[in-house]
Image (tube, helix red, strand yellow):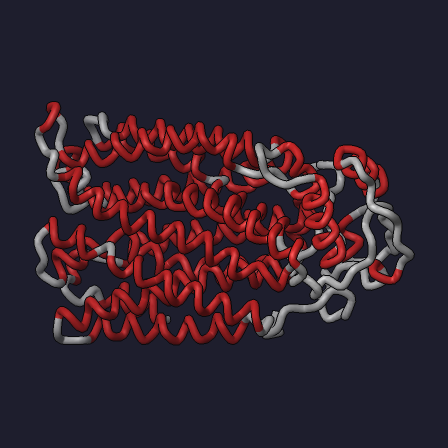
Length: 485
């Protein structure tokens, strides 16, 4: 875990390395028919325990896949395929992740409107409970929902859960009491639980390890752009207050819920399947292109196809302490991000003295800025094949940003601190996701690790929802010191 560079397949640097003997086997001609090729490879790997890469390093010969250097990925065909996958997969992943996070954007934007008074969320800790209960529900369903991505296929599963949480968001615009809000938050957490871990898992199955962080950055960039735009849209929707007999905050939930339902329907055709079954995807890769992708993944780490599913083959990876070490990093990361995502408008209004409308508008620019550090740091990390130094650098920027946000005397300087912290934590999200994905081999282990990291990420969200205390305005010293720590 302390290694700062990406372990190369076959070097034996990590326990989870791909089979070092794989590239040494004799080659076979690639099947002409894509369907036959998938069936042929499936039959050869059906009994292959991908966890052998974790333990026994069994030699595997895969007819249909010529031995190749996984670093030789810059020929014209490979570059064309990579662009296709980037445009198709990373775009829809960014959109779905942003819709997933727009809930917190709506809730935080609505927190500075009449919603707390209308629903009784301003009494006691009702608002914090609405955040807490959503996170608990999400944590409970994250592993089953990530498993479902592999069992039902990405196109079906992501379209179903996206439409479901869009419908729930829409219904939130019509609640009358805080108790009704809590019920819908529980359902929303269950529906949204598979979005981030499922997409992170899917992306990791499509790219060799040295190309993954930039692709996670593409996903994060699309996510934060839509999230920031959502803040501006919320400002406009809040101006509809009273139209159609609905308060402005209700329009936020209704409009964004409708948009999400539409995207959920489109997702069935836009989303791609796994590399070995990509021929099922709508107007995507040709037979030759699908074979190239599958060969690159198999050569890079030797885990193209999963074992047959049993719950034991998934849960056995809970015994690997390294999984929980990665998960703890996500826990600490989300303490910071949750505090910012839910409470930046509150900080801007109560702490820095901006109006509610200005607070909503000023929440957006830091997210637009964050696209720059996440893309630059991820490009550099992939180019020079390093992970830990990038994570450390981002953490230093995060500490500096919170110090400025918490201790600067001028409001503009504190707003600059919001920029610095937002850019750093979003950049680190891509870095941490690539860090764990690069050090795990085996499809079910990849599923379990991604879900475990996201569950701990959610637990960090619970902690983060309680560290910003209104009575500590304008300094919010608890949030600042906990985040720095």
